[in-house]
Length: 296
Image (tube, rainbow, N blue to C red; front, side, top):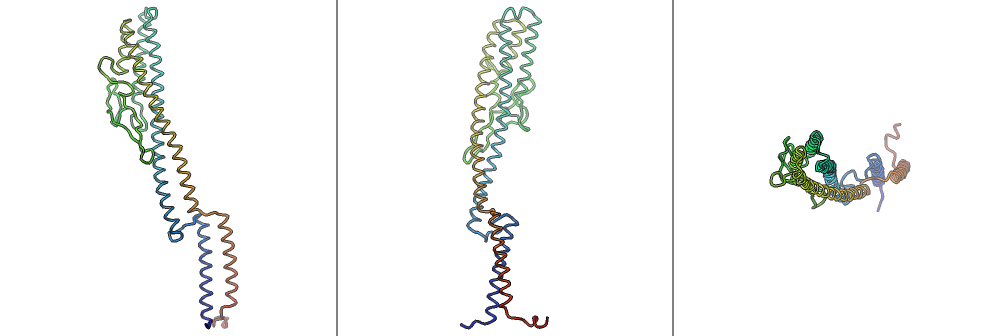
């Protein structure tokens, strides 16, 4: 086959353009830090990267839910721990009030009753603890869980968070689950403290003994709620750890597909640049001279 000057020129220019294209692609990868700048660069890698990004988005959503759940449970645990401390002090006062020597002085009885009512007020404040703008013990109802008089305004609804794929967790306990149910023979902890304060102030040993037992029951209920909250918090911590590992693994896989190895890319860019410059020099010698060359 006869090779003409036109064929040589065409082939040389084509090879130069291909070499320049490879160089420009590598330079683009270096400037963006990405191996894949458009889908056609690596169709298989692009599809894999899209799948990894979907998984990463879901994992990030779960991470945000887990952070919210951990914050909610941490707030509840803090409130319940403080509540148990208050009930422990109320028990000390109940024991002191049942001691005939301790209540012989009316002023002492009044002081103990006043402290018991203060404990009730503080406990009521803890019952209205909020996380963000939401009361944590009112179920799914809005507003404060308890009124200023100790009436429960919430419901029995569960606050649920999606914490993992196909796994959700209720992160709340309602006021009745923590502080008891109002009415009936015993009532909730606020009614118990109210009656105990009245009994101590009056020096009624029989009533003090009865409310002391009711106070123990209320303490057991709150202790069980604290253990429940702690168990849920431990589960959240475990899932958070696994999710964090999953996010790191997915990001590492995505980086292997999309990100450029700078050292390798710089080396490749220098080799391609040298190759392109050498090709230009060779092309300048073999391409035929044009009319413009004679006119210079």
